[in-house]
Image 1 (tube, each protein chain N blue to C red):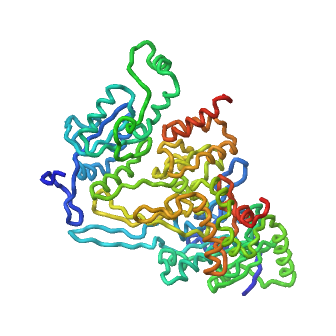
Image 2 (image 1 turned 30 degrees about the vertical axis):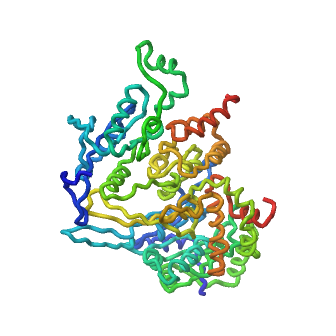
Length: 269
Length: 347
């Protein structure tokens, strides 16, 4: 890396690599980027670790000279493919930032319908170019995924700190239940609410269940998630196949399993 | 052991005496489940009226007060080119535990063996454990309770005083000086023959109420023989690997340690989080190798630790039969059923 560049920080006497980073968005609500900007208490610390050279939501300046690209959103149009390929060429490290970038996110719900129907339902007679929704890795190589809808700012900060210190970035492999229990919550199944916590990757600190809202799986599957058992549990607790499918396919993280489930249910629906 | 009896209404003033200058933890109702049954939890209690001494079982054990789910072990700060380490044992005053059932008292006794009795006692636990005053209370066996099979239906030690409900009176066993002295604040009397008879009647009635049993005869040997049994695979297929069984267990103490540097780069912390042997990366080591990548092997080792390894080391099981794990397991995996299946019994 460019060692002659401005090095504003040291840690234990060692100068730190301060990467040039860009933030970009494809089809998305830009809420993940907003999460970062909202973290006012630590924003200056964040900016001292990275040099932001491109961040449309936050600044006027634009530069194509960056080492790490954080890309929010999913790929839904031809021109986005072009943009994404360009970003990939420029960036040493490409980060899929949030559930849309990692899995297609809420956007991919439209993949269940015909494109004509979708276009007509949303835009009526106005002409619009849109295609089926794909995650970033369907188009380019992704080096790191940051899960969540939206991403959790504390987790993003931890990842940035790890990058600055040259430490490995490791995601939690366990499901949301681990953090939910640590937060001493009443299990939502006990009060009759469906929840995907047992199969969804932790790291969110059980954000939704702590607020008595069942998990919808925005962070995708935990490693070794037992989806067959999850489906049985949902049924045993009296939740309809549609309730299960709605949750499983909401963010796209469980797409393979959701497709199978949809097929299994096909005849009975 | 010293026995006393006192009228039930005396307990309120006893509580007030303790609560006036101490932090009291006890069972309270925290809402209803979907069947309309009360959910209980151990919480800080300020008013005697909030206590639910008639509680069944709390969903989570009291261990969060002496083995918190998350605890900072040390924090570091950088100052003028140097660094400073701070250690806190995260307790500022003694805790009174008002109404622990025998299973939870026995759980503490088991934890003591591991966390206090070893060559390297754990100070974070010891400081909290040595600053406890425990009032035990008798219970009504629930359908999922199998404490009697684990020898944990009565507590012989590990408490300061233990209450048994005799209708209009409490029968109290006194084990510590502090309990004896504190009880001087209320009106107690020596039990008479009738109280002894009444006590024994209550105990034998309780014993008859157990419906769930675990056969522990030769269990360490049977577990050795059945290491390759297909039943482990069957239970493993059901297991979610979510870690809930360990998190709700009053005797599970395993933890993970995480070191993190604050984004300001001026501070760092070393944090402990209770972990579970059923979670995917529990047995993953440096370099990435995972000794137990399959759910059934992780579930099996949970049983082997509790019902075999611990028994060989301490001559007792690391299970008190409270039934919390089975009650909380969404997949319906219960200790009595798993053990019975390993023994080749009909489940």
